[in-house]
Image 1 (tube, rainbow, N blue to C red):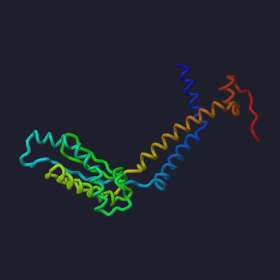
Image 2 (cartoon, one colour):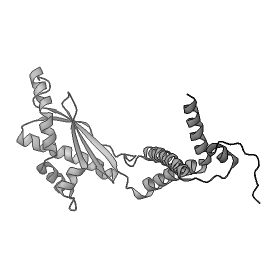
Image 3 (tube, helix red, strand yellow):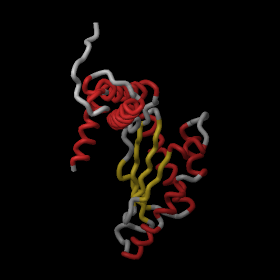
Length: 221
């Protein structure tokens, strides 16, 4: 117990000696992270469209039909990300500079578990374009499954809204992570510098390292 108390006192002494480093480094790290997040990272916006897909007439659907529709949502998700659907979107919107692969990277299609809902989420640096793409993909998807899968009952539950705030970068998260990393790095550097420093500059250093009392000290001029 006494050894633990001595170790804790030793650690506190080291941290007190290197207090400027321990305070300055996390602050500098947080400021740098804030500057990078604000000026160097392109903001990314996210817009989503939700569809309800029922294979048969919703008014007459049975439980088995409902299960079938839910099982087919994964198939619908693959159709929504197909080259046929995305090429149709690019053509409709006249996106000459965008390829199908580019649009696939922006798109995430999620089948909501235990439902007949599909969520189309598009990320882009332009918030208006993100919303436009999400709705256009939903429209193209509806047209394709009408043709190839004979699914007539598709309803847009939530059309895409132009996002007001970016989803990335997350300023608060970046600042917190940078500050925490700065604290850990500063403590590690403080312990390393203390380990490498063998000089004795104060009476406290003499007592700590030699274990003898200080009888006299010559002040600096």
